[in-house]
Image 1: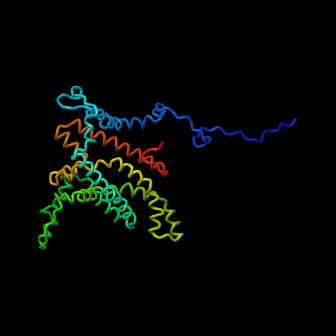
Image 2: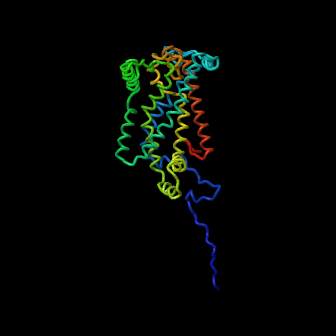
Image 3: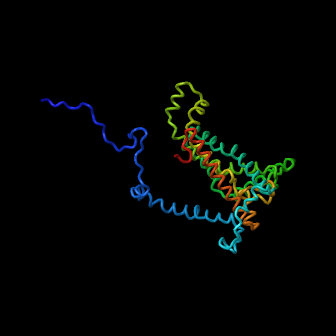
Length: 330
């Protein structure tokens, strides 16, 4: 008797997660198993993880003083517990705090509008340069200000734009009236913005130039065949290729929106005055370190941190809705 073989092939067994049936997910391995498998990488990452825990997470326990009438000589254990009493300043309309919040939001808005797009534009300009030698030279020059401290940056601007600076001396030599830029409350935000742009724009182009180098050149060739101009290539090829990193940096910028440069501002605050220069960070410093209101300063700083986290999580959720990975994925 002939034995007929079944022509139907049995499904192949596989452990490849990509070939798993739709709707199913491979069993997730435990954290311990993954650490055991990648123990060399875990060992290399251990020192950095320890530093993060010691200097970023462990100090968070000190936020308990936001609920105390904290006195340094009594310590956390001996200071009186006041609950949410220190948070009343957030709701009682304290003029100094309201002015600090207003200045912070205005500076954040101005710097987001002018500072954030600057490295994108600069990266596009550098990427369009044909000569690699010229591109590297310009990049090196633009990177240098990033490595200068804010003390030096403020001093440079003082020498250029101050009352006895190069600009005003040149104006006087030509019979004009000196400009009051340094120490003028009306120009303070513009001064801060120009300082940030000069210091950090060149350095921030690194990420955008890296993304531009990863865009498939076939897309540009195809657009040339279709007769697309340089502007249409920019709009339909270049900017979509940069969209992911732009959204990611916008999310991070939003989370850092209530921090507008403590060191930069505190160095120039005496010349301008608190009304024009007080922001949330300097408010915390002036009330906590200088004024001795440790509990109130800690309460303001804690609320600022919570708001920043909420902004990052919300912006990341919006990024997921637009199909981008954002800061993290589910």
